[in-house]
Image 1 (cartoon, rainbow, N blue to C red):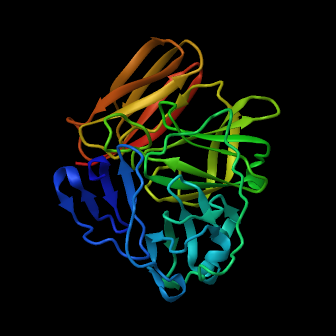
Image 2: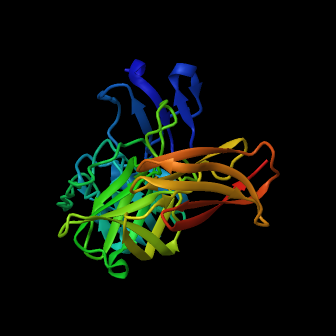
Length: 348
């Protein structure tokens, strides 16, 4: 089976990487969980004494860790975590499903034997699972899959986006989250009061870009089920976090403006900050003349990246920092009587 193991990570970031003979994990610990990436699906058989959950306290450290489930049968995550729920900020399973008690979100349903769960707590706490002999209630959770946007790829690392719907006037439809090249990185059916979306980051073990890079901005779209129209969601106020991807990050939006994608869109440069070069992208809804220019902090034009007629669609241009010092710079798009400016940072 080890020939099928690509990499294993524990909650502290220690690694077992058989291809390169790396083992920073050492021993598998009772009560801990582990992230595993495999070449193919396999079944792990473990022999030894059966764990008695009610006499095996599990220490959950403050912050992020990976929690193992010790019971022999599934049971409701709400019931199982009840004794420590005041310390639980958020839990996630390997598929990105969420238990978020503050916002009454439970997409995990039941904890399952053999699975691990990422958990973030506000303090160290001790969890004691109920005995196997007890008949613990189960949660019946049905998670409808987005039909318009579809499902993104599970890349093994993610963050959580929460949207307070009554503040945004988002009601019946779907939320899709994208990178600047229109790669789907998150999606969810809109819930009545609060929508939680798992946003997936890039899997750096693969050559292709299949998620967001750390620090990369994301684009939120809303598909209206009643009109079948897609609108862009511009978040104007955050309760927590921001519109940039961070592994295991949490962002909560409470105010937004919604508009149809009928005018040009200027995207945040990637990477940012940068040293060497960065990509500046924008979208044109129709064929248009477009000018993309770069300015220094005092408003002097230092580069023209494009100036001419372009077809509709997404375009990207590189800006090189070799001749410029560290600091804040600005880039501006002019197209079809539309002007937008964004800031970027050179860091040397």
